[in-house]
View 1 (cartoon, helix red, strand yellow):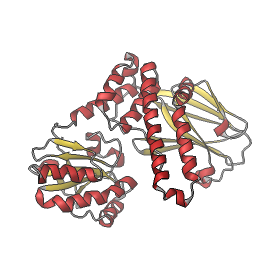
View 2 (cartoon, rainbow, N blue to C red):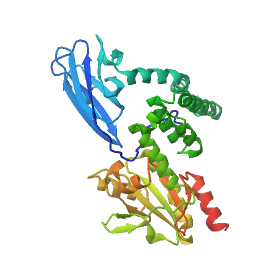
View 3 (cartoon, rainbow, N blue to C red):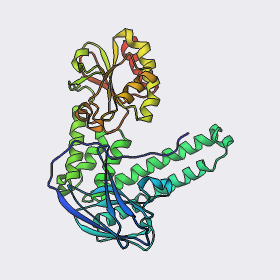
View 4 (tube, helix red, strand yellow):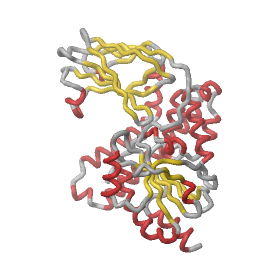
Length: 380
């Protein structure tokens, strides 16, 4: 049983905005020669790592960005390398913004105090606002972590944890909706909207009025414009809309078009060899293919595997028994052209497309795919 949910940053369409400068000044306690500080940023799934030597307990980072951005600050006190500390690494999540600010303390960076940063002060306020969710999840994880093997195999025990987990998620969503409504000019209202979009599968009926309630200034901000574009992409990919055509090369570098399969039911399936949930879902897709492939059904699989990782992609196809699917990829990770065209924010993601080329269902998981195809193909 897995308790917990990771709400990641959305992979939204790129928008061009003016770059603005930031300066982060740091101060930590005693360090050894060779000590360094690291800034870890993830943009559309790609990692960017900056480093700075710590001299006399001080370090500094400078750069540009177009809007506040969440980063992981790590301090290697002993100078032994970023990966040498494992789970015991001295880390701190914080936001960069177009300002000069300081993080300072006499010990670990995780206990240091941030000053001069309005966005980090606002982040603390937002976290406090939704802290009931964090407390609930901490209790659930504590109970699960301390459970015996017998308890973990007990249906009543695990069902109880699941009930608490879903209640915590519902509470978080309610708190985020309230925060957005009460704070229409806060950057973290956009952050909350992005998390809600992940949790409610980009339900525009809920998201649109919340977005419309934001101030004009926040809507015009880079984050506001990015979220607006994500909603526009979702509108163009709604149920009943024509599935946008595309061309991408298959495993033999031969071009494949979505429109090549017009006249068939197509499951357009976005996945990757590195994606655990995708690999776990693959048996369900294989089962559906075996059941319906002779009834005008095909699977067109788009991989978000990384540059230079074709062997991993092909290996996963073989290991998961996906050889009968049609596979395409440009091996550009989150920058995959088709994934960007379809506004893919996470994998697995799928679209079921009718013979006339229109989208008829989205994100079918487990038995949902079998039931949908049975209703369309067998019971029509």
